[in-house]
Amino acid sequence: HRSVLIMAISGEERGLLGSEHYSRAPVFPLAATVADLNIDMIGRVDTLPHERDDYVYIIGSDRLSTELHAVNEAANQAVGLELDYRYNAADDPNRFYYRSDHYNFAKHGIPSIFYFSGVHSDYHGPYDEADRIRYDLVEKRARLVFHTAWELAFRKDRIVVDRP
Image (cartoon, rainbow, N blue to C red; front, side):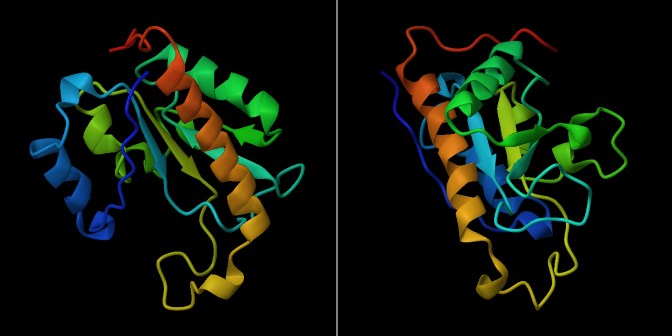
C-alpha cells in the first residue's frame, strides 16, 4: 500500500508557483512519488461539442507512462465519463500540458494526469462564481480521480515510466 498526499496548491496563474515550490522542497521524496493526479477546473462545461455533458479532458496520461493511461481508462469503467484527449496532443496550440501544476511533477519524470473540463466564458475571470459550477459533474469527475488513485495506491507494483 502507498500513501496518498492531497495538496491544495496556489499560485498557478502566476507561474505554477505552489507546485514549483513543492517540487523543490517536497514533503516526500520525488523519487518515491508514483504519480500526480491534477484536478484543475472540473466543475463547468465548455462550448466545444461533446456527446454529453459528462466528459472530462485527460491531458498527459500517456506522456510518461502507458500504464498510467491504462489505469485511468480502466478506472473509468466504474464511472462512465466520456474521456476526451483532444488537448493531449503534443502539438496542441493551447499547451495545457505545460500550463497546470502537474507539469512540475512531470518534468521530474513523475507520470501525471491533468483532469480538466475546458475553457468557458468566465475562465480566470471575476464572474467565475460557485453558482455556475455543475456539482453533479464535479462528483462524477472526482470519482474517476478517486478510482485511479485507489488503483495506484493498492496495486502491488508502482507504474512504470516507459516514455521519455
